[in-house]
Amino acid sequence: MKTFYVRPQCDAGYGRGDGKSYENAWNGLQAVDWSAMSAEPAQLWVCGDPQGRPGFMTVFVEWSYIATQAATAAPAAASPGPRRESPQPV
Image 1 (cartoon, rainbow, N blue to C red):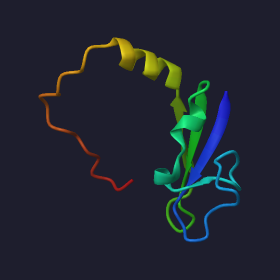
Image 2: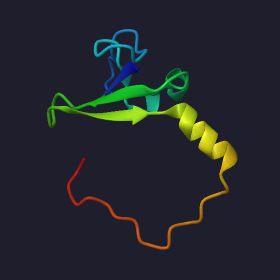
Image 3: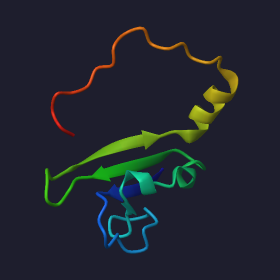
Image 4: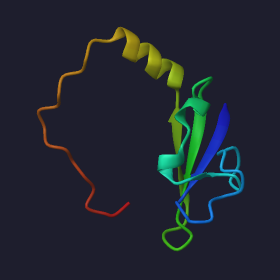
């Protein structure tokens, strides 16, 4: 399983910005190259803000499963329930 990294957006960016290491992480979530994670199951480390809360969370991406399900499944019905958001800032 490949591991990729994304860090909070900053003006300077991070190294090569290819997501292949913490030092060369993608610069913010909008910079994530989802196709780079599509060849095999991947792990995305979403790293915390140096000026904010420390730490990280991991996201496991199984793109081939998602693509297979999207191609064979009927469109999902809209959820009748209200969307639940955490009261805590993320």
